[in-house]
Amino acid sequence: MGRRQMLGPPVILNTVTPCAACKLLRRRCAEECPFSPYFSPHEPQKFAAVHKVYGASNVSKLLMEVPESQRVDTANSLVYEANLRLRDPVYGSMGAISALQQQIQSLQAELSAIRAEILNYKYREAAAATNIISSTHPALVSSATVSISTPSQTLAPPPQPPPPSVVVSSSSSSSLYTPPTSTSGYSTISSENNVPYFD
Image 1 (tube, one colour):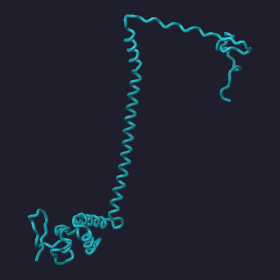
Image 2 (tube, one colour):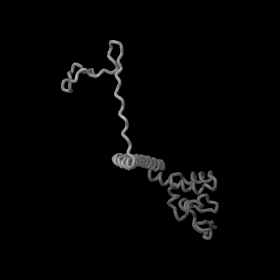
Image 3 (cartoon, one colour):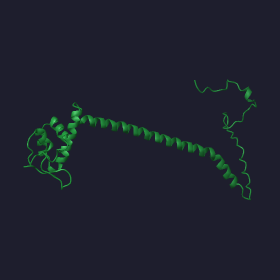
């Protein structure tokens, strides 16, 4: 007379209540009802949404075409898509997917901006550390030279370099090095001897 339905743990059996589909369609719920395992009598709004969007015969065909191991997921997917289609008749589930993709893109842009800001901060921090080290570097070098030059033996100063030699050529042209002929100061330099660099 009634059919058995599992609503929770395997111990609880329901033999009286018809499934949500049969309740909505006002028909007797048979034991081999294709909707009973997937549409609980305690949640009739799920099948109502699916029936309104797809129709009971189409849902039955869809469930029968899918392997039995995937029918629960298929029924849940149909319920989800039907609820979204009722909420947004134009875009349905694609509207939700599109909104989520836009959120992902904006969050990725925000994440890349924050990463760039972090890199900028690290670069500024490293530059500041380098400036601090370079400003303290002469003090470190001078203290190192003081500690190096403190041994008991003093070093002799380096020898003076030899004076530059003057090479005189036999030709009438001037030599490679000709000392200045006049001993005039900087105040007597005229602009006639200046070579223009930018014409």
